[in-house]
Length: 270
Image 1: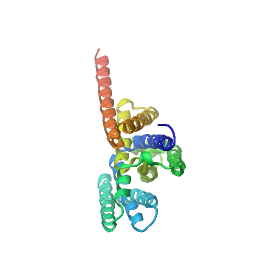
Image 2: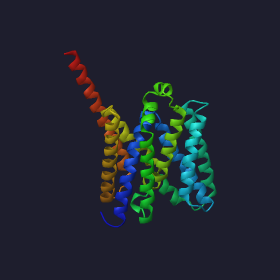
Image 3: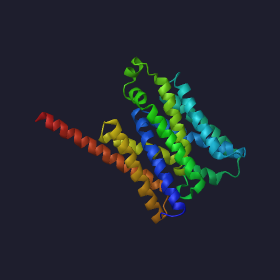
Image 4: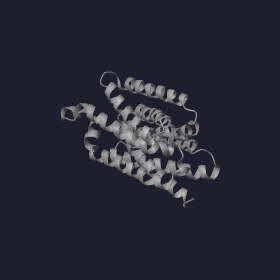
């Protein structure tokens, strides 16, 4: 389980879990969960278009990820954030449907990008995935303070000269970068649950940002590692385990948070 291709699986899955946990925390904090769903699923259209043109599908994936981020940020200046996200999403999906309808040899590759091929990661794919993950983490580290301020207290951020629009665009571009590295591994449909489930669970447990980020990363790692072992042993799809475990951790987090709040109320009343 820790040799050959499986070693590549462990390394890339670990990198994906770390970036999903960090990015997911800010997506939940900023109320951008829909964008975390729209960008990877919409980017699927880019891979379809690139394959149709005989290009590297991952180049198309990255291009459409960035285009989706720019589209959401641009339309968000003239419409509500959820409306801008939805419009960008449906336009990208429409293009994806068109590209797929023109192609006769894309079915297997489409399945791989939707659901991932974590057990088929080649040795020459490991370094680019890890490098993109490191770049995403570095970008968030550089803009951590203004991003945190604009996410939690946007009015205070504006008063201190932090542009909410620039922070929104910067974060969406980081999410696009994360999408480019994670979708080939866990798939477009699974990235959303891996980003949002652990982060939402962590936010339910603690309100301290760094603690929540660390907990989100830890939950994402446990989710992916457990899913790999379970999928390897049962031959069931990894996505099933990732989705179920993400939901279970979220329910536990909500229950823990609710119990802690009730205890605090009783202590204050006493």
